[in-house]
Image (cartoon, rainbow, N blue to C red; front, side, top):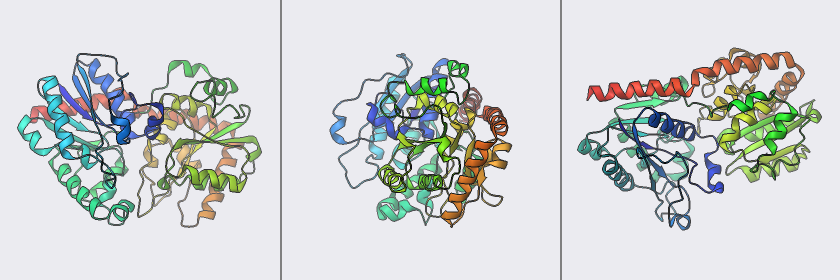
Length: 435
């Protein structure tokens, strides 16, 4: 098959621009699928939007992944000088890239758009002219939230977002297949009239075999992690003898990271713990100021590159992912939780009998779900106390912690790259047969 993939990749970006791709569903899907497709003998052209300033886009960065292959091509879409537009690309940019991909590969069978926004969807008239079939992946709620009348995006961008939502809706209607990453997200997007073809989760970043030679939570494992060049400066003062409580992902209002910071003052075992917040985003400065105001002594901010995420999760005693669903910004549980679960890391996360927060039941094992969830509430003080109580509980019960670790690893096997990509390849073959 001749496949065009429209999505993000961290490779070819300078390090500072990798930060926004920390644990995105697009990144977790795009690069592993390219490796899989090339191994299976398919041709692939990756089209990557560059969300950086115009000054940085004078020439493409050298591509370092995947290895050079006559069956792989990588094309960039560069931003236009449109400062008032949140996503500075147009359908014409996508059209030019698809036409070039068709020339490079001698035709196109499938165009797949990962992490769907209006500016990276296939162009409808080109689809008819070139004869390819299209697959759209909704990997998170960012794009689909534009259809929500209460969405924060609608409030921020007004008429511009209305137009983008219109294009988004039309493009989805033209897609031959639409896949989402969880049953929870399928139920959410179907509220807005989107017909979903199936569920294809995002696979976690692979756990390299050498990581497994280190005992989980061990000092040796932590020492090996902090010795990595990218972490030497930011994590050199981290205490390796204490248990690590981590968060990693975006620092954004929908992640509610402030709940974790506020909860620390209620943790009875706080003196035994090191808290590490790994990520980047617009809320980082506000979170640092909050931590400083509360005078939390052993809290560290850093950035964990994708290839070290499995190691980071294996070294931690537990992860807290406090993303609370709100009417104005409904958030599906992130790829952070999938990666933590696959590494065996217990996760404290919001969930209740009446509110499945973004797909918790699909992310962690039954023991994790039973013992480590807190009820989402409008009372933030109550959530602070609940998160703190869960941290204290897990720190005090090492046998249960190990049992949850083992169960989460087994539970996450359903997210294996081979299983997910084999299913996707089968779906693409069926789609081409139908045509």
